[in-house]
Image 1 (cartoon, rainbow, N blue to C red):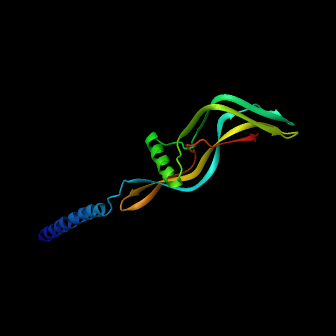
Image 2: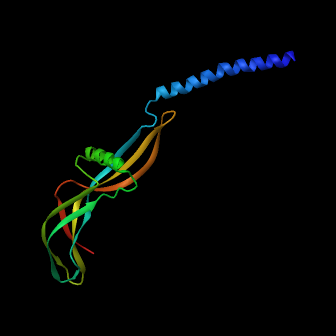
Length: 172
């Protein structure tokens, strides 16, 4: 009986000493890494691209010329999906700074458009409007305990530039 009491009291004393130290270690680890839970977006591989708008002519089999004349609203949207509006706003703001040009989720302009292109003999083409855009990769990361970086997702995005640069070309 005396032996069991001595073992029990020693075990209780040992537990009382270890548990507060372990709890204190957790608090120290958190204090050493206050970034736990923070979310970050990084932008890479930015390059100029062209994104098709909603404006296009009918098809023509050449030889011949396509003339597109219309008052219309030209529109295009970024290829970023699966994000909240707030998250998309943060991504486009970060991308605009990183790429040195303002990009956004969507772009539209109402104007009168008039363009002409020659279709080579034997080919069937239409005239398509493209909007200047930027293609880039966005990576979402977060900090997890004890102080590690975890990649949440990586996406390729094509976003329209907030300017009036267009390209009209023959498309299939």
